[in-house]
Length: 92
Image 1 (cartoon, one colour):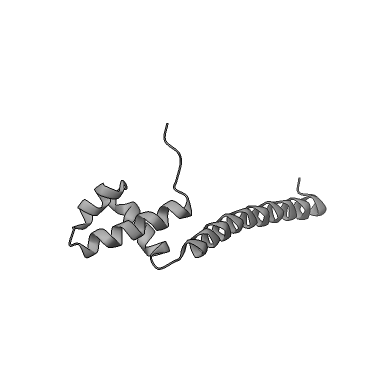
Image 2 (tube, rainbow, N blue to C red; image 1 turned 120 degrees about the vertical axis):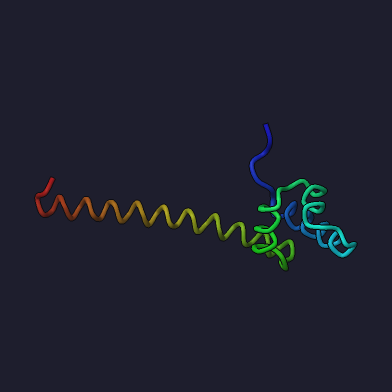
């Protein structure tokens, strides 16, 4: 079974390799095949992490993970708040 996702280090290294291949005149399909990802993944990576350094890419992934956790916390607290309001009004 394959590992889920790529680490920020792997993404940055593959994008650098892709830049080198692009400068050699290779087409996008050839580049994707050589670095081992599909074209949609390559385009998404280029959009998200195109000009980032390794440290910046790590920081971006950490911030995205933290943002997801905070969104879940806010959703849980909002739901708790709604439940408490309904109980206070006697609608349960």
